[in-house]
Amino acid sequence: MTLQSLGWPNVFALGDGCSTPNAKTAAAARKQAPVVAVNVLAALDGKDPVAAYDAMARAR
Image 1 (cartoon, rainbow, N blue to C red):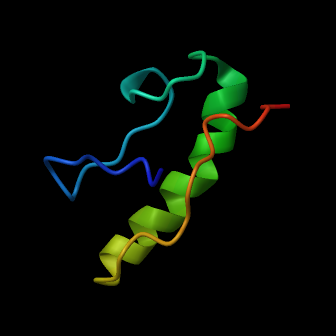
Image 2: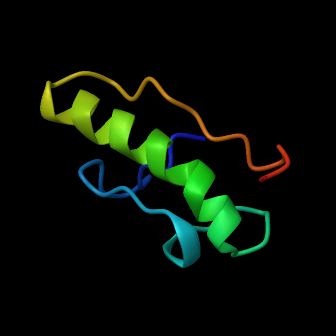
Image 3: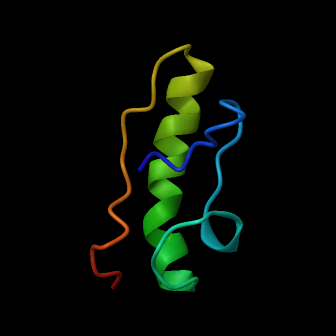
């Protein structure tokens, strides 16, 4: 999951602002932040998202 909006390709979300199946915790948001950062930079370069968030992976 790229954390990119399906309806608005220029919108990315993380933490409480996204609909992932895992708990809305700071630990999950900490794992989501690098994914969003990489994908926003890719979008700014006109490229497709390259990073993916595994919502079922254990956040530590």
